[in-house]
Length: 312
Image (tube, rainbow, N blue to C red):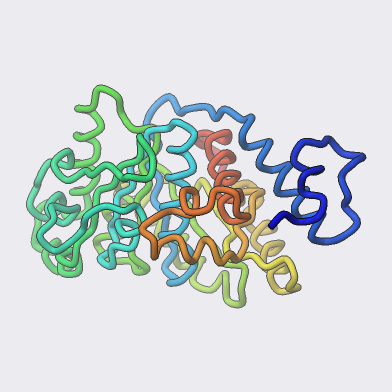
């Protein structure tokens, strides 16, 4: 069933569009955003951008962000790899790749030195979207890593070698972290050049963030001098609440250069998509959540790799 005025909005340019109701204005805005996205061709990075997505708070949208940004960029023609470093394996599920216990996974890469090329799977989502899955074995990796040589460097060495051996390297690698600061997360920070922090627009959103930033600073100082917090993405935004608007403004005040203009709204479609083994980009391309992730991905692509001093 079509909404009133939908036929007008789809092909019109302004004066004939009925924006007299909130629903009509919303439909008009979504149509305009779709047209902008459809017309844009995103620049590709000169070399692979490795981005760890992390926040020590659970439930802020880390995995959702990793999967949907990856899918959005792959849909635009980029070659993208998602490394699932969370023992729950939710990113693997959302990308529709096999991750049963017997599957070769990121656990075999960091514990058993299996070459990463042997565990990479192609996601059915898009032609150039790939995933290194996580299995239940990863739950014990924290303990096993303690006794291994160069325990903080194992993911980086495997990833760097994999990219070096590729004829057509990835444009982006996203690493999805567990919600804790253990050896798995440290491996993710050491492997990356950039950190993306999702922050939900809810009460206590900034709680624990200062500790996360201190930890990242320690990693930068002692293990990975290239690491920068390049991007902050505001998630679970509800424009109807004063709290969400206040949190968004507080985060922008604290991190004016890192925060993306795009806000990720609370969305039923975004929540539903993983249960179908899909990103929201393929599950419902025209939903508000999908458009928001497409816009956030475009911002990340346009911003490029931060130069020294850009994130200060």
